[in-house]
Length: 74
Image 1 (cartoon, rainbow, N blue to C red):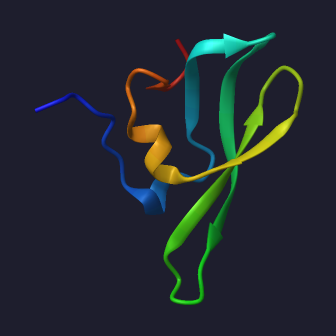
Image 2 (cartoon, helix red, strand yellow):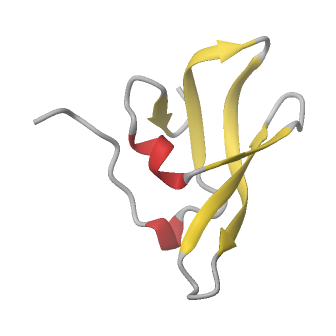
């Protein structure tokens, strides 16, 4: 079984993440907003780059990929 990041989607807000392969100077991110569907399920999250404050919308399942993301700031 492959390794993956495990987390509680309800506790994602304001959590910190590190990109394995930074693009430009964007390496450290914080989840600034959670987007929910009509059923109240989290369907997307807004990642904010700490250094540039640029925002990106991603599917929370992408954060499970350890080849792309580390939990916390490293």
